[in-house]
Image 1 (cartoon, rainbow, N blue to C red):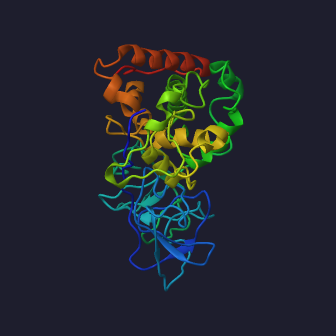
Image 2: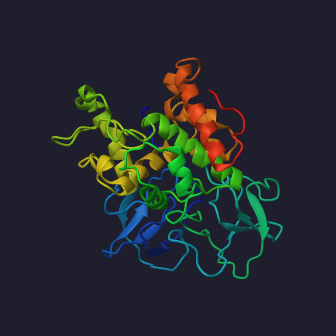
Length: 363
């Protein structure tokens, strides 16, 4: 698996004054948002990933969060844990990007809602021009200010998957029993936009693309741990200040075969789980295992310059997901056999769930 860097995805800014809200587990927040944690302290988002604060806990994921003070604990001016009962619109600003479900009031006085997103939310688009991202809507109660719409951003997640259990079983008939369908469904809450963005075709294509790459990485979900045990001690990098926990090894585990200490650290920080100190959770807890695979899918860019999620929802095709995962080794003629294996899985899985594979399959 290729090494990745977690890149910050810019989102709409925060209000000038401190407007805090109660932190909610399972919600994601935008750069500059301030929350009041259950411990009574305030925290501010100072770094963001592909989905804002990436559903992290301020007391655990200190890369995303920083303790702060707040003299005015207001209501919902900043974004975070889910939408309110009324429409909370903000004035559209040129050069800003918005999240799935956000509602804006445009300069013409009309309201528009984000219905599809790209690599950076609405990708700085104009609601009156980019109709794939935006849809006219009504708004009975405009909240105004610099806040946003639905906080966590995306519907779904944690309750259903566009691939049924029967279809999943058909894709992986000989898988290791560790890889349960329920574990996958439970993991969806970590990134609600995963396989849940765009139209039905896009959602099915993303699910098939994810599972096809997973099938290749994990030997059709037969491998919970890297097969070659001779390699197990060799994934501790001390470059750039990285460290390894005493007695721990960071060999490939889980659906994506997560490898290297820095990837375990990054995944754990994003998910609010200390995988750096407990890497074997990826091979012993099915939900955590699936979460690490979805984390990589939603945040890793490899040599593609975009995440696999963005590659599918923005129409770049399955081949770009290969480039994002292992393009440096496999694409541009590096390992055409490996690329073809991934494509074969993808074609098979799209057929099982009844969707066209689309174009641009190779890399």
